[in-house]
Image (cartoon, helix red, strand yellow):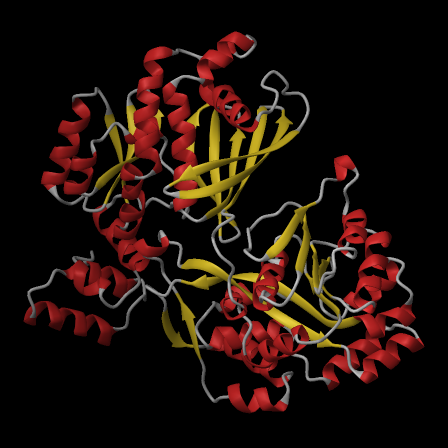
Length: 572
């Protein structure tokens, strides 16, 4: 029978005999525990799997965004959890809770846990958790859960079941003015902003209300609340947004502005009826956050020079394309910021205005009042503009007007929905633009996707192996020769990040874009006039030595900005 963790790892063929001898020698010559010695050289999950077998305690499998219900978290005081490295996970029944423990072999830890729960008439079902899992879960004491838990405790003194009062408008009005409910909502807003969330989702489930934050494009569960307060939370948000509190059968949209941690934040609110109640989604916008530079967005090398050169043209269109949520609007804002100078009249049409740019005449369209992109564009052309930004080409009329503006001496910045830069020209024809007008009006097509950046505080490189080398070599082989000479190698390093406190244990922090750009050349003009063909446009793109989004992504992988997995998930 194995007597040590080293024996278990050796028997399971997780380490070699030479490795085992090296670990044993270290234990003889240094004052270090077996576990610490193993953790210094092996993945934590591997060591704790062996630890689980050694002590006969099941290892808990937890998702990265696992959240402990506030009611369960309150069963063990924060000080005790910190001292003994145990934390409640979930409720099994009225008398039992699951508890994650880092050191279940320590008698003092088990005695402290027994003492803590006995006073509350609770039993513990013990699971082994890793050190990293404990650090991740422990943050919930001092973060969102802790503040919401405090507010909920006050709330429970005033109400037994809010859902029972949902039919009474008077009760709901009174309840949403209640300080604890207002505090719960305010705390959710505060932590969403401080956690860099772009969206908040408040979702009614069968028995609970789930709060999720979208960070760097990914939704993460952040909080579970009692279903009994869902109606009050929704009503509180409706009051802030001036929506109808007593209307829950149809969707409603609105917006409001609030000051959070010293910043003015705009909230765009959408409610949606579901079988479990109203779901609320809120987009967070910091209108005074400042505009990112083209370099910060991810433009590098030839693509950066290409777009800067295009912005110097006296007239024509620059079209940014990609699916919803690919960062097109942010790129337009950056382009505007680049050309925002004293001697230039810049006018934008946006739906809505997301960021305030000093020196740009920004106008929000109001389709419900008849003020659309098309009607706004007609008015803009009477405002003596040099550069016009149109948030999106949505219809034939807007497409034709933007082309007209580009042909009459204006630089036009706008967006389309296509999968790549090559698809922009056929898409304009599909929208009713005469093909003979396109060569003289289009300067540049830019396609993009957003990818998550690796955390600079915990990222590390390692030699690429197997399939990763094959993917990198295959992609480099399709690049222009100059890029092949720069990146081709006998061996490669790729970067990954395990997660740390700075990135909330996610391994990523912030996003950047990967791009491809297609210029309007004399040859491309000829192709368009003769009859647009994506096959011919693709050949011209290859002749231009266009860097595709995947190629751009692989270059950023080798430079340590993003992971290989991120590129493969985002590109074809």
